[in-house]
Amino acid sequence: MKVTVFGTGYVGLVQAAVLAESGNNVVCIDIDEDKVARLRRGEIPIYEPGLAPLVEESIANGNLSFSTDAAEGVAHGELIFIAVGTPPDEDGSADLRHVLTVARTIATHMDSKKYIINKSTVPVGTADRVRSAVSEVLAERGRAELEFDVISNPEFLKEGSAVADCMRPDRIIIGTSEKASEQKMRQLYAPFNRNHEKILVMDVKSAELTKYAANCMLATKISFMNEMANIADKVGADIEAVRKGIGSDPRVGYHFIYAGIGYGGSCFPKDVKALINSAEQLGLSADILAAVESRNERQKHYLLEKIDAHFGGDLKGRTFALWGLSFKPNTDDMREAPSRVLMEGLWERGAQVQAFDPEATEECRRIYGERDELKLCDSRDAALAGADALVIVTEWQQFKALDTAALKQALREPVVFDGRNQYEPEDMRAAGFHYYCVGRPDTAGS
Ligand code: UDX
View 1 (tube, rainbow, N blue to C red):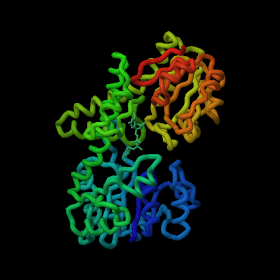
View 2 (view 1 turned 45 degrees about the vertical axis):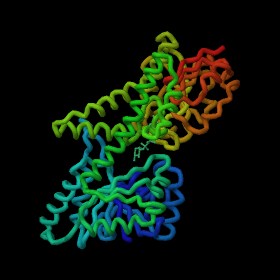
View 3 (view 1 turned 60 degrees about the vertical axis):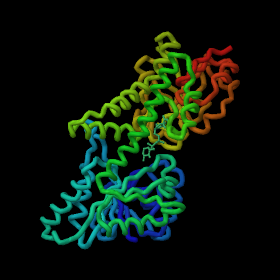
View 4 (view 1 turned 120 degrees about the horizontal axis):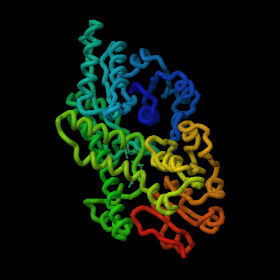
């Protein structure tokens, strides 16, 4: 099928590459000339496992191309995805400027029936606004007879496993009330609808709300567990035992109930805020989501409080080794990352940071530039040299095996603050560490 994708960010690029790989002819349109030039050379602007070979292969066999020419893009695709960003406005609501600009661009250039598919995460009612924008421009052009439908088809991919998620989705949500659109979408997704039926067809508003409800439910699970971890701290319980105890009930499940130092990334924080805002605009108050958000903000300060307490509130002149900068493993994304709150808090208190991350060092340099209180290191060992304590922020696989003897030698004091509960407190105690983690009893080394 002939497909056009507007927007070459995470969602657009992965979707385009996966659709091209399954034999569709896909053209990607982006206004960023430099990015398009790089993509044409097969250079991927984001770190995402498995994406580069997929893009290269499809460029080589002619199924995938990149352009800044919107007219060419509209002429090419019968199915046109809108996968541009919806950054939060000042008040947290999703900014639809880019989505509506693309809608008008499509209407400006279309000359035949188009299926316009909303892939961006957009508030309920956006499909209607896209529809109005397209109709308006068509009327201005005197081409009101041209047919089109606006379909909601939200994306559920996770950064770091985006390609796999997109190739093997849990579900494929198609929001439309038109039979022809449903059929086109079924045809497009047939290669991904294997093993069991994954396609769920619903009205467009339900599809739009499903995306927010999914992310907000997951964010709620995390904030709930973080709240339990805080209670566990005070009563001397172990959140890891509690996690196993409640996860074994299939109604709760084992996924997404790991306590930590808060969720970050481009989706959860933004989508929780946007749904709170939508509820307010409807005259409702999203009490649960407001609590989810405030727990998350506080959770990002969790380790700072433990660090303050350990060093008697005086961090001036101290140096902290930080392992992990990205908001989660297997990505270089630092948007809303807990590492930022932590580093900024340490700097405010007059401390230095020596940080290592397997992928996010460049991103960190882009955000903070060169500064005296930040040393970006190229190995986990380099980050440790001469530091007062180690702080673990992101659970990268390579941090899992710990050489406690070497660690003890590198640090000035045997102190570890672990925001992701990577090690067994008992093992750390036996190895002579003062080990702080989340929702588990702190252990002073023996
Ligand atoms: C999320 C959704 O999972 C995905 O379906 C949606 O399409 C986009 O948003 P992503 O932001 O890539 O994906 O990251 P995810 O793996 O879901 O992790 C989100 C955050 O939650 C991370 O900061 C992670 O550290 C945190 N988390 C996750 C926890 O603190 N505890 C958990 O148990 C799980």
